Image (cartoon, rainbow, N blue to C red; front, side):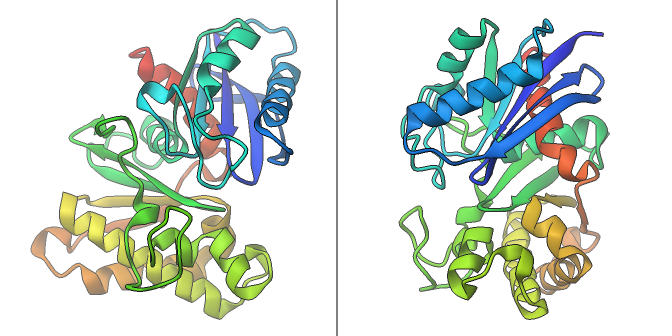
Length: 284
């Protein structure tokens, strides 16, 4: 069975795996996203990818990366990875590995994964979210992944949920990412998100639920799936609050049956999603 090299680029860690064409993860590995400059970080990602490949021939490489990015993922500038600004990751990785590479936003990748073999299989309209170091989203509307003008559609982390709230890395104030992401929680409490109190988990769920309601009311989406280390780590306390808040803000008839759940693929979603990025680009 043909395999795909899947690469996940996140603010906290870089991960790579070989994934089969039916979504089974084979060998995988990860390292922290720490480096003094962009070239050093790229070398670490390249070494990680080569370690996973083990000289096994793959069909190609799919990358899910934090954004934003330029059209077709030619250059990426992840807000929480300052080492890379207008960095040509796709072409550099393709040249170094000698395989074709397709790159897209990490949350869009998870949306593809959940539609492929996850909780959104067979559904034509849904939102997949990542609540982790940062916050992102991927939208599938009428059966198609929404790309937007240059591929950055779905950045729900930069929906305003707290007017005149704290400054966000995007330059705006009161964004969801500025109040509910792992970075925001650590900045506010002085502790990593995994040590958050029940109060913080509930507060995070409230703001995520508010952002979800905005998307649901705007786009008539019946299903929302949430992944990411913060969301999954916060568990039922967080999810219950997301559901409660979204219900309070969704009072129209077409929003009454909104379903909000965690991603079915759990921690495997980003790497399966990266493989799905490759398959989606190839029309598989």
